[in-house]
Image (tube, rainbow, N blue to C red; front, side):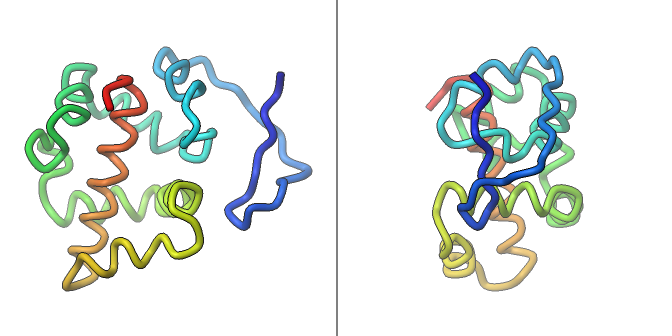
Length: 134
C-alpha cells in the first residue's frame, strides 16, 4: 500500500513522485505515525552523522547530554537547521500543528537559542523514532 502524502498545509500533495531509497534505518521510521517521510534528507544525514550507539544515547538521554561533537554548539545547530530547514519545519508542523513555532519561540531568548532548541528537539525525536526508544 502506498501512503498518501500531505503537504505542510494539510492538503493532499498531488503530482509528486515518491522515490523510495533503501536505507536500513528507514524501516523503523516508516512504521511511525509522526515522521511520514517528512524529513528523509535530515534522517539520512543523521544516520551517517551518528552511530547506532550515539542515536540510542540521544534517544535515551537527549542531545543536551549526549550531543555529538557535530551538534554541540550554536554554529553547529545553525548549520544543521539551514541545511534542513524545510524538513524540520514540516516535521514540527505535522507534529504540533499551525502554531508549532510558538512552542520554540516561547522557550527562547533569541534566534540562535530558538534554532538550537528546535534542532535539538528534532534530533531527539528522530533518534527516538529511529531506535524505537521512547
